[in-house]
Image (cartoon, rainbow, N blue to C red; front, side):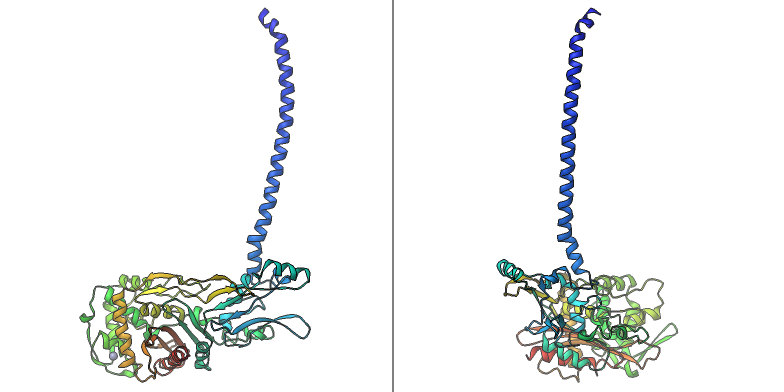
Amino acid sequence: MLKVQKNYGYQRKAEEDMTTNHNKKSIRKEIYVTAFMFLIFFAGMIAYFVRFLVVDADSFIYNSYNSRFSVFADDVERGSIYTADGRAIAKTTKNEEGNEVRVYPDERLFSHAVGYVDHGMAGLEANYSFDLLKSHITLSDQINNSLTGQKSMGDSLYTTLDYETQKAAYDGLGMFDGAVIAIDPDTGKIISMVSKPDYNPNTIDKYWDDINDTEKGDSALLNRATNGSYPPGSTFKIVTTLAYLRDGNSPSDFFYKCSGKFDVDDYTIHCSGNKSHGQEDLLTAFSNSCNSAYASMGVEIDREKFQSTAEDLLFNDTLPTLISGTKASKFAINSDTKESIVAQTAIGQGRTTVSPLHMCMLVSAIANNGQLMEPYIADRIISDDGKVVSETEPVSYGSIITASEANLLNQYMEAVVTDGTAEKVDFGDLKVYGKTGTAEYTENKKITHSWFVGYAKDENGKKLAVAVIMEGAGYGSKYAAPLAASVFKAYFEK
Ligand SMILES: [Zn+2]
């Protein structure tokens, strides 16, 4: 007790000290907390500004519904878009009132590829808006422009498109609706991309309501090359052939005697023009495009294998390309699918749909020993003073077809041109490998889409793959294949 009293003074002193210390500590703590909060606040501010500059500014520029080109358009003049051979296909000029206007010198020729900047954006104008509104001229030039109130010139986009090839594709399609797409199989470069009906990007504002008139129903804004959904017709026999081989068959296993028709369930599949092709092996069934042979082959293929082969060839999947928003092709059969539907599927009718881009990718892979190069259209970004800002390197998706399968399909596709459905087409001196297609798409079987998919090779080994579809035109051999021939000639003879 005494000990406690004796110690009381110390204890009190200690308690006073503790109180003082406590007060000091709490003041210090408040300072720390305040400093910490300021730190958090500043970090937040910095993060906000960085986010605005790096993320939001990008999404703001990329937002295709900005009424103006972008905030940067105040300081930078939107750069031009060029073909691979240096022709300006979109550029900024000034009108009589001195206002900036976007001009497309070739009008409709590149409409779906290049796109537009009125009423939102589309095509390359939308996808590369950010790059076209950035300037990589020297900093001193930029500062100088800023001080003198002038805009700096934005970077330019060089595409992979070739003017002459594009023109041949566009003119060849003529009045028909449809699409043409051409790809360099070794790199994936898109050499031409045409879709009709089209629009004039110079006057899109004036005719916007008319273009979007749903009652007219021609969907002129739709890029049919990348987003069209078509029945593949006989071009699909490429896929059926691969499914037959992957189901454990060898090419020499196949024999068929064609009488001009094939009965399945209560349905009859006819050969084109009710022609009897007689005795055939796999090569002649392919080059004659014999529907009866392929219908009989289709019902024999294991359905899971048929489905998995189609999916290995990128059906029911996003296509591996550097072009945004492409349409997936559809293929579906299962154990419940009626035999008559499977037979129609095998000849490219039924429920299967494809885009021209997908078919072009398929033949590109065949042309490239099975290896698929991912298609792209934007080749490089160049500053106004000529520096390369960025450049696209070709990307391999890997092999979707084995080299031996590609070799076999090459022989069959060559036979189509030398002895088969496309033998009368004048391809000049080029070595051409292809498949024609005539696709029914209405109950009236007389109205058909005309297809050709294939590739050409010159004596130096340079190649070009194409997919052509002409809506409602008729036989593939009569319309789409000659158009492919003029596209090949434009590309190789330049
Ligand atoms: Zn036949």
